[in-house]
Length: 511
Image (cartoon, rainbow, N blue to C red; front, side):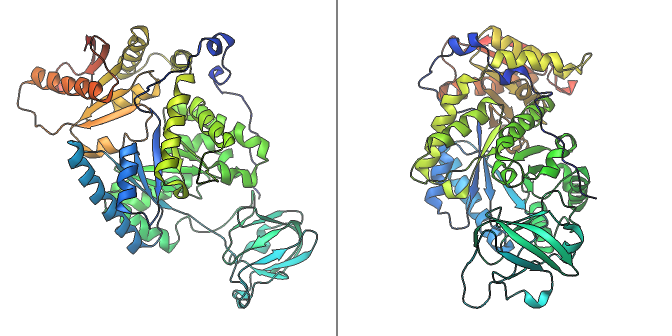
């Protein structure tokens, strides 16, 4: 049975997505903003050089997402990234908590090889063609007969269904299915290459979630202490459970980022948000299955739901011209930030210093347009009472930061949970987080506004002195980065004693 896709509506989206006239009139253009609060996920291609990588680190990337899919190449790029980051950390004088991510592509359906010496074929609109699942034609794809490597395709495709080739660049409509042959008419003309992707919107695809190549990458993820695993092809909570089962005892150490890239996943978005550690929205991929005018609404809905749940959400962006960012791309980036995105995923084609610097500038200019007070009020109104004590501390700290126009919130944490809760309530200032644990520091890299410092000095027995040292480090770092100036208010969230188990104290100090 074909899965039904839920209709995307504005229901449940906070009012903050519709700014008031008073807010728009009161907005001002800010200059000399020290650094964007938006986290940046950079797709690292296998061919990247050490100089380019170090330049990207200097521009402030938070997560290095390795795009290589061969195990040997993945290990090579991973070694290069870690070596460059260690070198950059030595020059910086502190450990740079760069998180590293891998991606498993999930189940894929592809066409075969083009016949003979043809590099591409052109399918003309209105022409008839056939799709076959017979392996005998795997290397003989032509405009009249296209091999597809999914044996059960004739069972799931019905007359009238769309078959999208090469991410929608060619669209076929099924006319009839006879055994292993599907007769189609070309609905959208285009060029077809070898091994092109095949998408059947809303069709129930019976393929293993993790093919053998992905299982090898999963082994690397566990063995190399990777921080984030991006997973494509998940359409419901069962897929998340399967991935976690494959990771075994390491599932709590690796953050699972689910990519939302099809209409079926969109229909199960609530359970995907609940059981994932983070969400990544692939608008380009959604546009293949959804009407183009619906995609922006889907993105707004997902961003709002993730903000309400306190889960980090990544918006993927597309840069078509490597020389500059176009006006429409600028608007897409700015709107993603205003709508509540925690991080932006930069494609590997845009991994140049000039483009990356342009994106950082856009982020810094878009952030002052976010109505922080309205966001905070919406979130605390929706948060049910009575609540856990740590929620009360986080809400009080963010409220105090808004009322005192604090320059920063300094947070001491062991597990990272306090910093995550502070980030959930969207303070207007940076959250300078100090922790002794490198993995905790790296796994805070997707939360908007969190700046992490790894404190290396061991606890020597005097709790109050240890707390004051860490707070002083946070304030000093804030001054160095330009967030804090002399006499600025700073909110400090700490624990009153070592055995209390969580930060239970909020105080205001002046730098």
